[in-house]
Structures are given as C-alpha cells and as structure tokens.
Image 1 (spheres, rainbow, N blue to C red):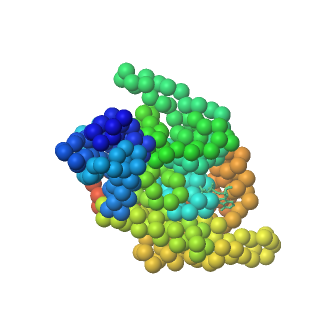
Image 2 (image 1 turned 90 degrees about the horizontal axis):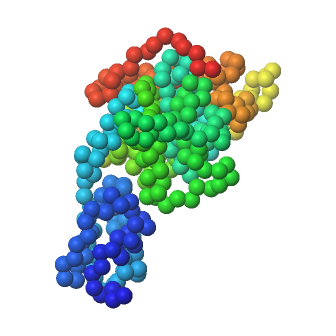
Image 3 (image 1 turned 90 degrees about the vertical axis):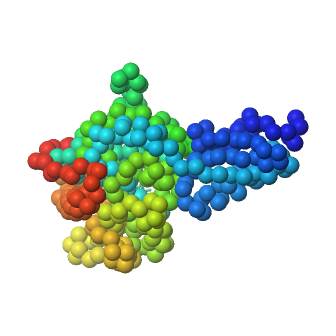
Length: 365
Ligand code: ADP
C-alpha cells in the first residue's frame, strides 16, 4: 500500500492500539498535514505531551513519515458524562482509597473501613479498581463467584455480589486466580467503565473505590468520569512509601483534579512481638505518615499496627473488623468515625453531594 496517500482506516487501526474508539474524535487530511482530534484519557499537560509524542512516533514508523501530524486535544463532551453519571445518582458518597505504592495495605484498609461503615448502619459498596492486582474477591470470600446479569429498564446490568452486607464488584471476578491481568490502558479503562456504569449498584451511602497503586491513567479516568467526594491515602511510615504517598497527595491537589483528601491512614505502624510487655517495635520507622499528614495539613485518620490476625482475616475472606477482636474493631471504628466526620464537613462546604445522616446500628456480620 502507498502510504504517501491519506488512509483514514489504517491510521485508525494504528491509534486503536493506544486509544479507545470514543477518544478518537476526528482524523482529517489537508495536503501534507494530518490533523487528529482526541479526547485525552489524562488531561494533565505532561500526559497530553507524552501522548501526542507517542501518537506521532507511532504514525511515523507504522504509517508514513511523509506527513506532518498535528494532534489537537478536545474537552470531554458533557452529554456523555451526564448520561453515565445518571447511573450513579443513587450513590451518595464516593471515596477513593489509594496508595502511591503497592503492598502497603490499601485493600486491607478499604475492606475493613467498608465493614465498619456497614456496622454503623450505612449501605456500602466496594469497586475494586485495582485492575492489575484485584484482591476484594479474596478479602470478601467471593473467589470463583460471578456477578449475574439483571434487566434494568430493558438494559442488561451486572449485579454486584454481596458479602457481609457489602456489595462488591471486582475485575477479580472475571480473571482466574493465577492469571496476571496484562491490559493496555484503553482496555483497562473500558473494563473499569463497565464495572462502574454497567452495574446495578442500587442505593448506597458509600462507594469505596480501591484504586491501583500509583498515579496513572486509571486514577484520572475515574476522577474524570465520576464525582469523587474525597480521597483517603494509605501509607506505611517507611521513607520509600512516603515519597510515593506525597506524589499521590500532589495528584489529588492538582488544579484540574482538585479532590479533597479526607485523610491519611498509617498502616503497619508498629509491631508488638510480646503481648506481656506490649513494647512497640517500629519496623518501618515511627510516625512517618502521621508527620506527612501534619506537613500537608491533612487529617490523620489513625495508625494500624502489624497484626497477624488482620492478615489472616484478609486471607480467609472475612475482614478483621468483623471478628470478635476488640482491638481491630476499635482501631477501625475510630478511623471510620473520623473519616465520616471529615466527609460531613467536606459535604457541608461543597453542595452537590447529599449530606449524610448517621443511622442507628445494624449488623453486618
Ligand atoms: P495493597 O492493597 O496496598 O496492595 P494489601 O491490603 O493487599 O495491600 O496488603 C498486602 C499484604 O499485607 C496482605 O497480605 C495483607 O493481608 C497484609 N497486611 C496489610 N496490612 C496489614 C497489617 N496491618 N498487619 C498485618 N498484615 C497486613
């Protein structure tokens, strides 16, 4: 094929490797110039420049170096956004739980806050958006289960699975246990969109979103599409974890993202090897995340020690805060009360989200 001639189909095929169909708005040719209009998956200047360079490089090598390529970034169309958002209108509060680093206990904290909220009488759902390392299906004893399809006004929707009173949707329901999820950006975003928008979540007081570690496209894609009330950042007190957590805080505070951070949780704060002496060993350093919260003027939600019981509870699929261990219950109860308090304050200042009403106790176990 003569690639010195404009061929829209071929260009589209090349771009589909890195963009979703609906992100490619227009491809036009004027003489030696090819103009491509795109809705960026990530609106930051840095990400747009990187994407633009990548597209030009791909087209030069995979299509033709005879043309000048010009990439123009378009805003997200409002009608698409609001149509999708209608699906989430029964969800009162959406909280993103993130950690800039993997393995610091973000999912453990998410699952335990969820069951504690449920014990306080709230209706709670978890969206496991940790698309490359989902774990909510394990932590809620839902391995091997698949969500059913239900008919909602003539449309087929996924019904979240329920465990201990919590509605859960996770990409882990659709992959095998030992199967690594190797998806390129657009595929991952598409799968996530289905979990969010093609699901029948019903009425929820809280949706907790367990984000993947880092500050990548998945985070921005979620924040662009749904109105997140606030974020919680989880970190260990370790210097390397804190360095990454600072990046997470900066992401939420970027001008074009601007999501209030409801608080920082310090996980794996210390270990008590001897229950008699109760001496605390600060394995990952002392007060690192607490000090970071002070530095950034962000509420500190609490510290969670290294507890064998908490790890075991996660592994058997029954979050620790549900067990009869007063210590674990107490830690998460205090943390969750603070979280709700900061959320209430935040909702008071920013109108669209309905102000929460704390209800009477209900059982979730
Ligand atoms: P992330 O979601 O950040 O990748 P996880 O919640 O999956 O992290 O936790 C990683 C591992 O550490 C899991 O095996 C979990 O059970 C364990 N873990 C997390 N927090 C604690 C804790 N406070 N005490 C003991 N084990 C913990």
